Length: 313
Ligand code: UDP
Ligand code: MG
Image (cartoon, rainbow, N blue to C red; front, side, top):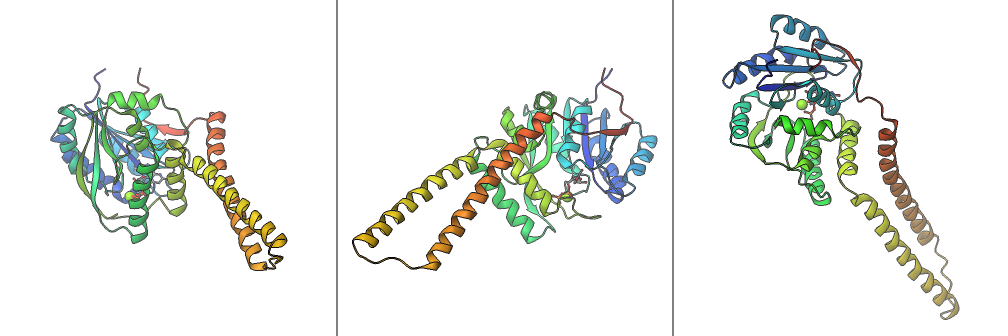
């Protein structure tokens, strides 16, 4: 079998209005590189007509492949499924909502030809996204960089081109809580960037509400850093030390100064504070345990309801 030069992986969650336009722009962009390519659209349990749009496109163009999930599994898992099914010697990951411009792909491909295994898109500007999203994203990536040992580039999403070698390595990393940009950074190889402006979402709405963003951020941190655990331990030691000093002072003031503290305020504040710290600590430990639990269960990452892709061999 003749393997394609490029596979393009496009996760879609309620993107019925974007799919045709995405396809048109991808065709224009990729055709300038090669005629030997494949598109893999993953329908991640969309509630709209994305599925029918994809079937229609795949009937018109045999290079269009689709994977239809049995329900919504989440963006990172949709991309992972695309990687599992891809056959190209270079693989591009791009959002299906036209926020990542397909026109940047030839530039990525040129860098790949120069010998880079990973060419990630780095955002110069984010258009049309709320202040809250911009500010949380900005600081999240900078904090993550500080507390992890892997060098995850700032201001990058999953929009990138990766070599087949990387895809094969990723398949050997079966962790359930995917944080692909972290895993790819962890792998090493020669990595470089191209800059792009992140466009506004034209149709539909974001599939990443705050709750999903928070889960994603926690996956990124717990997957690549033990900092929170060490932080909890250090905070515990620090607070115990302070309490010890307070105890000494209380004994001193009772027996020597003959003045017993009668404060209700100080009591309630300190017990609330310690209570809060304990709850946060238990929560952090819980995050790591939930990670272990998911990986011990060893369930399949996703369930495919139907696809037009034949198995590789
Ligand atoms: N997406 C997905 N499953 C989800 C949520 C999102 O496949 O559960 C897709 C979505 O269709 C889009 C990409 O992942 O192509 C990025 O999601 P989104 O645009 O909602 O995130 P944002 O750009 O707002 O961070
Ligand atoms: Mg988007």
